[in-house]
Each structure stands twice: as structure tokens, then as C-alpha cells.
Amino acid sequence: MYQKDSTEKGTPVSTSFESESTVEIHHREPDDHHPKIETAAAVEVEVEKGEKLVVGTPVRSEKGKLVFLQGGEEEEARFQLTDLLQASAEGLGKGTFGNTYRAKMEGGSISSVVVKRLRDLRPLTSDELTKQLHFIGDQKHSNLLPPLAYYISQDEKLLVSRFAENGNLFNRIHGGRGTKDRIPFRWSARLTVAQGVARGMAYLHRNTTTKAAAESGGIPHGNLTSTNVLLDENERALVADYGFIPLLAVPIAHQAMICYRSPEYQNSKKVSRKTDVWSYGGLLLELLTGRVSTYSAEKNGGGGGGGGGRVDLWNWVYRAVREEWTCEVLDAEIGVQRNGVPGMLKLLQLAMRCCEKSPEKRPEMAEVLKEVEGIKAVGESEDEEDLSMEQSLEDESISTTTTSANGG
Ligand SMILES: Nc1ncnc2c1ncn2[C@@H]1O[C@H](COP(=O)(O)OP(=O)(O)OP(=O)(O)O)[C@@H](O)[C@H]1O
Image (cartoon, rainbow, N blue to C red):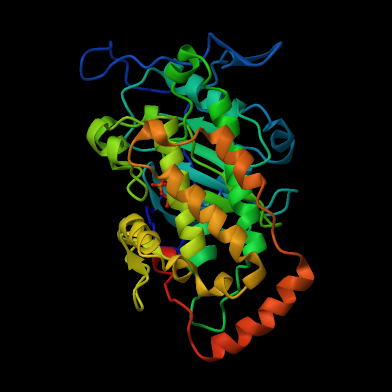
């Protein structure tokens, strides 16, 4: 197992696992406090006319081994448990499930993977846990980051996924503001991210078209935040960490979604497609305003300082729209791209609809996707014109400032 439990970002941690041949996962009969979780194994969902998706695959009993999930087979040829054992690890942070590390492997054709130590799980049987992990692994879309493999032993429950080269969206939006290290995050790139996230989310929701599937627990996402949207080497948005809420112990699950909690979630503590739509609206507000919601700032170690970066995002934007200073809510970094402003305002309106207090008034993700895909980014040459204007505005120091997540 990991010898040192450090969550400090960038702290090298030596890794070594104990090889174990048996697994002990709490076996407990369901009761009122530990209700049985419906797993996905037997659920068949009609996703489109004539197309059947069988969610959940039979689980092989492979205790104490690195088990590759569907789609991880390619990696199976590229790295094995022994490679992970020898990897050096760097703490990336601590999330709802526990600590997350980047494991850097020597040689081999895959150099880095991310390892999550799952903590505070519900008392699940081994079967329930692995079925849900396979169910999550079965979700395949180019804007999702599925886990590649898992490892379960007496002491450890590890989840392995691809390392996203460009980190998370929170840092992309807020990182390096006011410093020379800031890499501007243009409107067209933000719109592409918004569209990518909508595609990934609409895909997840597509599979909840039957009651049985909805109860299977794999989806909805349940914890969509800007730290759970990762960016690959081409800055493509990858939605991560979906479908885990049903695995978590109840008090821990209730701590999730701290950034983008919808009003009804605060009362019912139940995730749904509509709580996801609210979270997506929150994500759009963060993308458009460059502001950090007070809640995510707290979660991410106080980021968002420096002159009004931290706000109660929803109330602030609602007030702004009511009082007709709409354009002023836009992040100055994109607000100067004048040709893009109509598209930005359309996206802002969509964000507001996603954040309707009443869940029934919120659109479904499929509708959201259609709308966000209908918004066109400005052409590159227009972008360039805007940039020269932006430079002069920057000189007058009008940009809003925030700081990066995790103290970065
Ligand atoms: N596959 C990955 N590639 C690159 N960075 C990652 C990857 N997975 C997680 N991270 C980053 O590692 C850090 C810790 O992630 P973790 O999922 O443990 O917590 P979180 O996303 O901050 O919070 P929560 O789990 O509550 O949503 C975050 O900054 C996250 O963006």
C-alpha cells in the first residue's frame, strides 16, 4: 500500500503495494441505514430506437489484482500492477472519495496514470462495488474520462484513470490571474469546453431513460464541478468522477457537490438529472464570469481572493441581469472579444435557465446540448482583432482577479 499519506500538491510520495490474495469488503445485509444498492448488471436500456445498451457486465472475481475495465484493455498491454508498484507518486489533491495521486511510471508506453484511493464507501458487497465500477467503466464517450482499472485488497481500494495533461477546468479558468504566467483562456476555447461538457453530460443522461436505469446508480453524474472537468493535451473537456455518489457512505455523499448545489438538493440530498443541469449552469457561470462561487472557493482552499473574485455566483448574476448590467458580469478576458459577446450572452441566458430554482423549469441536458451547440464562436481573425483591444485594456488593469485551485 502507499506508505505515506500526503495530499500536498506536488509532494513526491513513494509507493509500494503489499500484494494480497484476499479481499475483504464489508458484507452486510441491507437494512434501513444501509439500503441495498441496485446495481446495473441486469439493466437493459433502450437508448435509441432499436439500439439496446446492456449496462453492467458480469464481473469476474479478480480480487487483489489490477482489474482492467472495458476500454482499458489497451492499457492492460501497456502497464501492469508491477509498473504501478514501482511508480513514483505525486499528490494531486484530496476529493470527496479520498486522496488522488499521479503515478509516474518509468519506461513503458504509458508514462502517467492517476490513482484515486477510495475511502468512506458504503458497506457494499464485493459484487456490488465491482458491478458499479464496471458500470461506470462501461460509459463510453469522447468527453468522458472513464476509469481504466481498479485494485481491491483488504486495505486499499484504488481506481486508476488516464492522466489529463492540461489539469482541471478550475485552474484553467482561474489559475495565474494577474501574473505573467497566465495563459489567456479565449471565448472560443471556453465555448468548446462548454459544448464538450454538455456532450458528455447528455450522453450520461441518455442512459437514464428508464426508471430501472435511473435506479441503477451509475448516473446521473451527481458531482459536476470545474475540478471534475479535466482537459486533455488538446484542451478537450473530459468529464470525470461520474456515477460515484451511490458508492459513498451517506454523510460523505452529502458533502459532495458543495460547489454547485441546487436548492432541492439541499433539502432532499438526492441527485438527479435536474441537479446535474443546475450544476452545469453553475459551471457555465464560472466559465463566463471568471468568478469563483463562494462555495467552491472554500472547497478549493480559499481560491478567488484578490478583489471580488469570490461571490455568491447565482445571486450576483441574477441581480446583474435584473439590473441590466449584463455585459459587465462577463470575465474581462473574454468580454473584450466584442464579436463574441452575443454568443456569451446567449450562453449566460442558458446558464440562468439551467439554474432555475424549480427543477421542472430547467431544460433537460439534451435540450441544453442543442442550444450550446447552436452558439457559434467568433472566427479566428475576429478573435485576433479583439486581442489587440484586449491588450490595451489589460494595460489599464481592468481584469478581474482570482487565484487558482488548491492553493496553486
Ligand atoms: N485524471 C486526472 N488527470 C489530471 N488531474 C486529475 C485527474 N483526476 C483528478 N485530478 C485532479 O486531482 C485533484 C484531486 O482530485 P479529486 O477527484 O480527488 O478531488 P476533486 O475533484 O478536487 O474533488 P471532488 O472529488 O470532491 O470532486 C483535482 O485538482 C483534480 O482536478
